[in-house]
Image 1: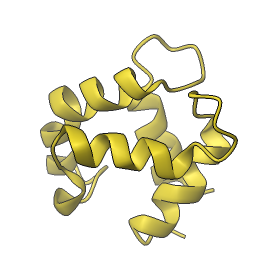
Image 2: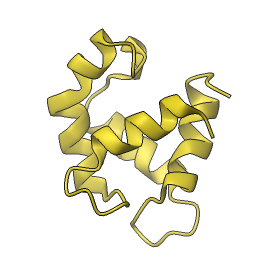
Image 3: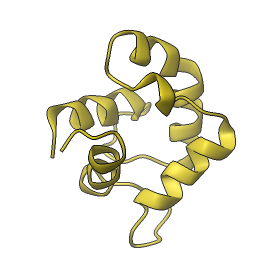
Length: 84
């Protein structure tokens, strides 16, 4: 797990409960995404629309419980963003 994945997870965890919901991922990427990309914490090409954010969530939700743990999230973003 990369430090970048951990930092991005924490930025997207809007209620700070240690998990991500689909709604959190979509809202956080829409509202915080540009500033995260500008600071280097998210690749600019990682910014997308609601469908892209939802697809990222689906790819990461390995057990289908509609909640992402840090481990699920980092496994996908590290690979997708080339951080691992």
